[in-house]
Length: 328
Image (cartoon, rainbow, N blue to C red; front, side, top):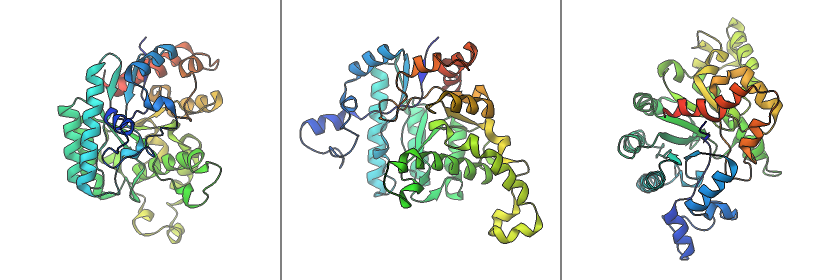
């Protein structure tokens, strides 16, 4: 069984070399890349040695969220994405039996995002891209992103959703809640927007992975279904604005649970069991958030030690489902 981790992060080697030389790289400095964590400065050889210790055969590499420059000048964003993607592809080329890769793209511009997505997949051999839950405040169901979703479906590209600026950060800045709560809120909003915005109906073959266990989706889906039912009442139009009241969906939001993948980064057996029972075992993949502070520690042994999971379910999460998602 080949264990495949679909959720982890890495810094580009040219960035690390620039920091070592006391200079910036494309405007990025020692304040970026979470360098307070020494593992984020490791060589690939050190990383592979740690993978061996942890029992991980392959990692799906993606750069840290710092490098998604959606709010910057487009030409700068394009340059950063291009150089990051070239670097991820180089890492994969150096160790093709240990790494596969995801790229990043300048999502603030439809044409540029599609061009870089096509280059990443067709020319560099990356498996898809990582994007954030919103692009400068625009949710991913908006028509401006239809061309991107169409291209992702056509290319068979995996699209992993990871947080950027969270809505909770605008309410409370303390206690790390912008991450511990906000991250999960963002993923739930993304599910609701993509489903109720009709993206999965327009592009039914998309391969979208909602990282961090899909946020609160599994726990909130019954209320989404109730809202879908309630909004069909004629007097509910006063609580909804414009086209939202028209209820575009012909079936409840829970009908789309099986259209997404979800990683296992839930941190508790009960939560993971509930996720599996809600979305189906075939949709849950092994993702650890390595090497971040919020990673699943000793994740392979953690999954294998869960008494509520069958051996077949463990193998599905650790190996079969990631391989299916990534077409390897």
